[in-house]
Image (cartoon, rainbow, N blue to C red; front, side, top):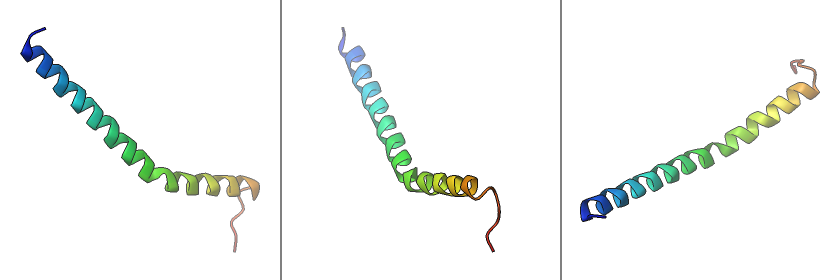
Length: 53
């Protein structure tokens, strides 16, 4: 393995790690909204789709 191959491999590894971290952070920031939406769905199903009011 030459130095250029090793360097490219390390760069690719760091790029992949950065991508995974970024996607994880984006997903974790959306978790509260997903939970709220899931509760709204469960409430709508439980109420039979009737609108309150």
